Length: 163
Image (cartoon, rainbow, N blue to C red; front, side, top):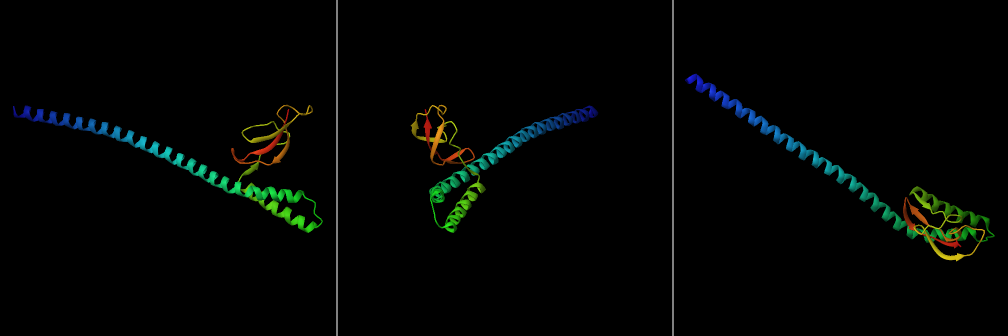
């Protein structure tokens, strides 16, 4: 009888150990699932944070460049103007080239205008003309150059549109 009692106690202990293993496996699976979810959330946070930083950088850079563009416009006008002193004109052209190099370094590009079709997302129409030799909505003249960083427009091109 005592042997039966010992065997029964052993059987109970085995069952308890198996239940504990099952519980720990269940707990492990739950903790592993939570770990994977937290890791995925953290990866998403890093991606979102990087995207926000890049957006903020481009926004600040756009604001700074927008302040520089009037000076760039004036340099272009100075280069186009007649000048008797060739050395002076070369100096102005050199300064203009430095500005353009700075813009290129920061991935700022000019928005194409003359000969292109009017696109209200990048062009600002200030006038229209009737010209049968031009296509509909074709840009025939540019009053002020437009610029963008990537797909973000810093300044719209001021243009004259045909037809």
